[in-house]
Amino acid sequence: MNLADAIDASRDRLRQRLGARAPRTAILLGSGWGALADQVTDAVDVPYAELPAFPRLRVGGHAGLLRAGCIGARDVIVLAGRQHAYETGEADGMKGAIRTLAAAGVTTLIQTNAAGSCDERMRPGELMLISDHLNLPQRSPLCGEPGDERFVDMGDAYTAALRTAAQAAARAAGIPLHEGVYAWFLGPQFETPAEIRMARLLGAHAVGMSTVPETLLARHAGLQVLALSLLTNMAAGMDTQPLSHAQTLACARAGQAQALRLLQAVLAALPA
Ligand code: HPA
Image (cartoon, rainbow, N blue to C red; front, top):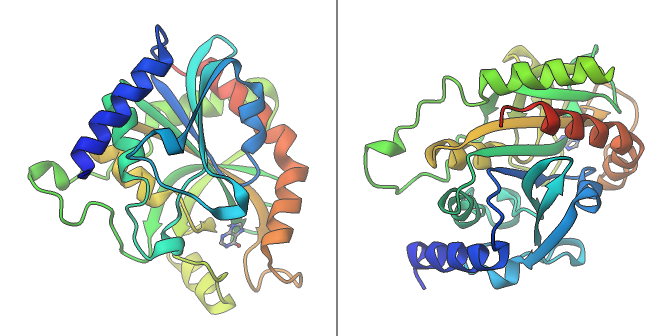
């Protein structure tokens, strides 16, 4: 099946499973944010395996799950599981998934991730709203796309009005929320201290191995994007602690409750 047919088939399957629901907000869960899926009420689960345009995932035994339902009063789709560019060397692993969401009527993508802080003022366990990004690998999931739409304007990649709403929600909930630039590294290895010095010189506040490809796909598909990082460590060379995935997950677990509280407050505050 080619990608266009797979997206049509995925959209039809999704619509059939959603019934009368018409969620306009999708949330892509990154490391440390997975428990949000437990807060969805009135849930309908659609395994990625039922959606031909979605990636087949094998990381950590999770096959990928789309869960539709409500968080508070908002109709949402929650995506648990993403394919990272470091798994395949290609940046387009989430292309079919994001285009399916757009075809099914989603207009806003909220992304979440775990990231390393490269700003001394932003500490592990704290949260950062992504204001902009650095696509350091200079990879794009849009390579090979036809048409003028491929020349996506990235001047407002992370919609300013959504960021303002998110900051207001964080303030009202009493949750500190930094804001800064996310630098994408391809991974899967962590960065070297020299690479982190470079990223800081270039204006990065946090570094991670995800999110940017999905932002490019979402903007190309006409979605608005809001993105939140849970800072799980000081980046390489800024701390004596060695970096590991286990350390990322342990810190993510510790910061998770506040991260979820923030996300709920943001969802309640976003424009309808
Ligand atoms: N670097 C890249 N990705 C990450 C980090 C980091 O320090 N922490 C969590 N994800």
